[in-house]
Length: 191
Ligand code: GRF
Image 1 (cartoon, protein in one colour):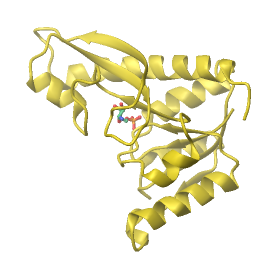
Image 2 (tube, rainbow, N blue to C red):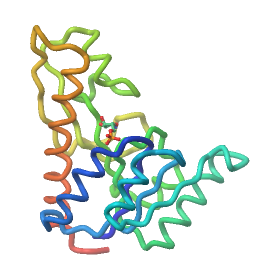
Image 3 (tube, rainbow, N blue to C red):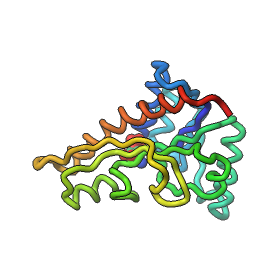
């Protein structure tokens, strides 16, 4: 399957995914990494793995719908079939949702439906829940509401700090996301 990875920041999930692709555990061609932030470290990581890296910002366009139309145009140009969100900090609008029905996947650092939104780890930590985790899900029109594909729980220990909890969550993410994508890619029969 041909995929684009969309990310806004560090790109540690991209790194985990591309390494699994290189080990041929995921039957996926990463056609492109796109970032809405021109200084995102993920763009550097993409170049290190010889993956095409493109960036432009909604601020470069008159409105969000025009930005999305341009992004869709880019994805079509690269013949992308699946869109993998890996720390892409924007809502996906109707233009992309309609173009990729059940073909946009996201990873979220909590056990959805608990703690949706931008601060899933911090919100769970502050709420002092005994357990949080990681969710991989399809994107729909809501914020972190689409159908769940896989979840893995992470125990919040007495001695955990926000930083140690973040580290535990990221460790699970880096294992779970490649595993889910491997399954999807092996079941995918083409467009
Ligand atoms: C991850 O925690 C992911 O769950 C969330 O954004 C973070 C991205 O981290 N959606 P990275 O850029 O992959 O390192």
